[in-house]
Each structure stands twice: as C-alpha cells, then as structure tokens.
Image: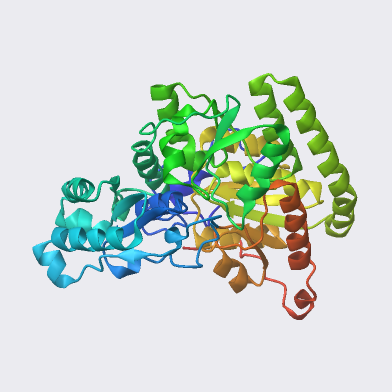
Length: 453
C-alpha cells in the first residue's frame, strides 16, 4: 500500500489476507493529521452529559467549543450541561498565572447556577504555565460545599482515549460518596450519552423487563445517582473505549461486575437484553426479554426486507471513534444488504480488530487511527457508495462526492435500539439512493504506485 506512510504500515490490514494482528494503541504519528481528538476533548465528551453539574474550562476561549446545540446529549431535567463556560485565558494570564481568575470565575458560576458538582477542565495552556488547579478546586469545595473536581486534561499529553481515562478518574471521585437503597435487580448503564434521546429508548426496554436502572453514566446523568452508582448489582458498558476503565475501578473497589454490550443493530440489541436477564438468573425477566425481542423483531423484519432489496450490492466505508461501535455497524449493514469494505476506528484494541476481521468479507480494509489522505484513497480504491463516520469525516466524503451518514455526537436521530435500526436503514437508503448522484461525476480511481502524502 504505497500511499500509506511507512511508520503506519502495521496499522492497516486486509481481512482474509493478513494473518498478523493489527498494531494499535499507539500515539498518532506526528504530521499525519490523525482523525483523533485530544485528551481534553476525550474528557469533555464523557463528562459533558452530566446535566446537573457545572462544566468550566480553564483555558483559551477556543477550547470551550461545546455549546447549546453542538452535541445531541439530551436531558430529561436540568440543562446546565448545555452551557459552556470558560476562564478565557489571555496573554496576561499566561504570563502571571490564571489561578485567581479561575477561582473567581468558578465561585461566581457556582453561586449563580447552584450545581450539584463542578468539573474544572485544564487545557494545554494550563499544562504549560502550571496553574495549581488542584489547590483551587480544594478551596472552592471548602467554600461552596459541593464536589469540585479537577479534570487534568491538557490536550498535548495524549489522545482522546487518554481523555476517557481522565474522565473516568474524575467520575470515580464521586462514586461511593452517597448511599441510597435501591432494588436488588439494578444496573448502571455506562457509556451511553443519550444522543438524540437514545437512552430513553433503552430505559423503556429495561423497564419492560423488570430491571431497575440506577445510574446512567453519563447520558442524562445526575450527580447524586453517580455518587450512589456503587450500589448497583451490575455495570452494563455500552461504549467500552470510554467506560471500561471506570467499570474496572468500580469492580476493584466495590466488587461491581460488568459486561460489555452494544445497542446498535437487532442482533447486538437483543443480546444486550438477554445478557442482563442471564446475569440475574431470573426466568420471568428472561421471558419478558424474549417477548420484547419477538415483538420488536417481528415488526422490523418486513420493513428491513424492503430496504435490503433496494440496497443489496451497495458498499460502505466505516470510520468511527470506538471499534465496538464499528463491529455493530458491520452487523447492522449486513442486515440491509450493504457490504462493509472499509472498517476503521480511532481507539480499537487488538481483540476488536481480530473480531472485525472475522466478521468482514475477504478484502475489507481494516485501519487504526487513520488520516484524511488514507481514508480518501481507501474509499476510492474500494469504490464505496456511502461513508459512515463523524464530524471530521464528513468533509472527506463531501470532497470526494460520496454519500455521508452521520454516526457522531451531533446527530439528531436516534440510531440505537430497534427503532434506531429503522432510522439507520432509512438514512442509509436516503443517502445511497439519492437522485443527486445522477448529477455527479464518479470519483476517479486512485493512481497506482507512488506515495500519496
């Protein structure tokens, strides 16, 4: 693959042809313009949906990009999380320090909004000038009486995945600080961020099964529920990349077991319900789960059959943040007749990529931590009809003249659960079969030989 930088050759594999394990969990190659985000972004993505907490970014105003409607994490109550606050560090603050500015800003915001807790995020500038954010948080906590938690996330110290770990450590400081009696058959949902209200669909499924959901971490999250999260019998981890570490911390300290699930696609959604019922060893719960799955699948299959008839033969490129999401997308696309010809992620593990290899057809390109040049080349090489990705992949698809399906945090349509599978099929169909493609030129095949850098 001559278009791939030499240092990245081991991070790309081809299903059915390469027996070696793909190299991953590496720092992004300098200069490759990786699609990964920074540590700060990773921490903010995870913590942001806690709806009754204050989120204050200690840094330049540009880091405070998340505002009212840029992310689809909905709340059934308070919406403080949708406001973005920043200390807006200037040149003078960089020279003389910004601790006093941070303290005053946080104190004013806490008094004005009365949050249940406050998260103070550090950024690259703060990591360089050395403000003692830990000390400022201790002073603020003593002054206000609420948890004030430093989130040490200077962007330069790693990737988005490292930010997930920082966020889990921040959340864990709350876990176990309150004790409230809850039903015995209770779970915490970890790693669902209630994008477009997806969490509410899942809560309805579990309610019908007789399962009590104690804390949702972090979609539609509440500080008090997180403080009592250690009381649940099981952690159900949806986004394993972001939340596996928190599940491990809770297992080590409080003995709460965990299981990894996915809520995308019929197969994985059904398994997620069955696995919880098996954990509780409850025959009645299992019977309710089976009935729920039967009702939903019998409703969906005829509708999906129509989409499959229309879409069979279409090819999709997938590049998303977590590899477990990519695995679910491969299965969901297969249900509607779409072949996955490129599958990649920003934060996959060797085990994830081995599973992707087994799931995909021979010749599927599998890539870890890709960049725009690689993705553009792969899409042209495999002649994909549709690109499924996030906000950073959208321009790649648009420049090539390719249909794009948004599977990122900004989307407004739920794609999880059984209802989400129908929405997904509709979106793939509307995009791949749009009449607009009759008026566009077919993207030229990439030239053979020579580096494209």
